Length: 280
Image (cartoon, rainbow, N blue to C red; front, side, top):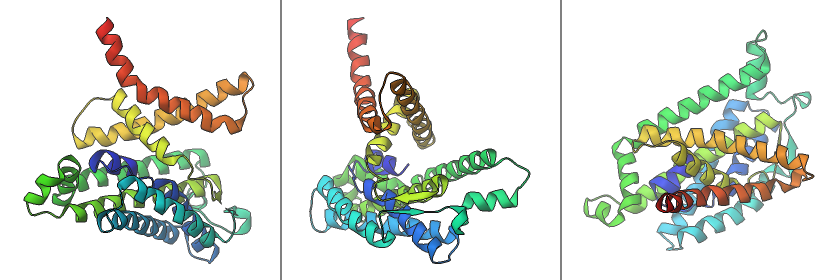
């Protein structure tokens, strides 16, 4: 959803995602190790992600650094910042060490429900909540201004709206959502790793494109639904590719190779479809 806001709404190629994703997980782990609860860690992770996005926006709008380079610079800086926040390359969030993640709290609150169902229901409701909030935001005056900035920045300026301000808001919101995803995934897998964000921007972009191929629609509701569906299908396709590759001798470290090839196929699909249609 965060990648959708920058790439589709703002037309801004933001590579900060690769740094803000582990940033959210690192901030969550830091607060949990210092005795704060998981909910406080999640809120702090979102704020940290928003600040990272704001820094990228400032580099682009005020320093006039190109969008792509602004994201790369922030991503590089965040690698060292994440290491400093964590104190070491990886941190365990195991319950045995006294860390009570959201999923542990849910298990204790509903002891009769299997944990696998609790996790699915909670994450499903969280995705629905985020989708509804993004839908509502993008239909507000600020949300419409952000979408208009991505379509025609000059026209927005003639209407008395500051396009730079809209970019700052959109990029900050995008990276806040990305940091939220990082914090939730860290709790789901039970540990934080400094390299967990590598390739996330590619995965997000691929998810957006997959959703657009599978579903048609121009409304905001359909656009965010495309993102959600595309994310699920993309992860399923990656899992199937890994399983198939394992059967023919590939290893788990070939995941990036499969991911890259899958993204190439997805990005080429609309063009291939158009050419095949012409041939037919």
